[in-house]
Length: 250
Ligand code: APR
Image (cartoon, rainbow, N blue to C red):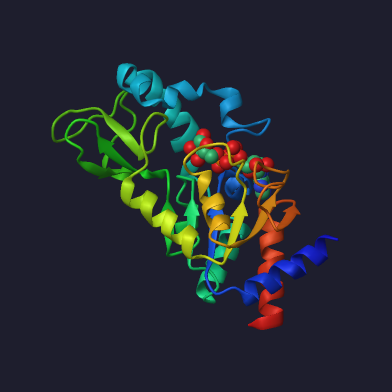
């Protein structure tokens, strides 16, 4: 059964002209980065309120303490897994135009993918909440309770989207355009719970794209807009799909 779905997916990939991937935390789960809403997820251990922008500005020390634990301690030694490398290979073979990711862990780029649209930003950068100067993470000492801007001493925040913040308009428009242009979208490892990111696959479907979904369990998309649902871990399934594609068509 699963092999049949793998075969069908490979044929979709071969026939499609513009393929876009849409990824969530599940694509990095096998890189030992916890997801948000699984049983062992981040929001089971930490209050998402700590990443709400007004709470952050009122309690920067509390929020920064947790931000370091959740993101910086975890991400520091995380490496891409076979799912990230599978997407990089598809891009190299000219069979993936872009990846729209909700993840801020930089693992798609670390695996060699070039065209990555980071819908929720990236944890590798910090930005001053006062003068908006940007900094690479390595330029700032995170051991301070509240990392501050070397220029104006303003509070620094990670350059990813907090709850209560809007998505960068350019990024939003770019992602919407990719969804509109693609004739195949591959959704990997997302629950489809967070908006407006969750609308991206719906956008693709509306404009006529076929949808393949890879997830360890059904998501908000599975019964509504997915053409092929392959249940299982992203790294193994994507590796199988890419290997079979190379064997048959490349
Ligand atoms: N392979 C494939 N899918 C997996 C794997 C795996 N190894 N492990 C978990 N999953 C799936 C889960 O079944 C779930 O559907 O990944 C999904 C993770 O869902 P969430 O934890 O909700 O993460 P995500 O969808 O990326 O969250 C979106 O919410 O908190 C915000 O900004 C945060 O970008 C994040 C957004």
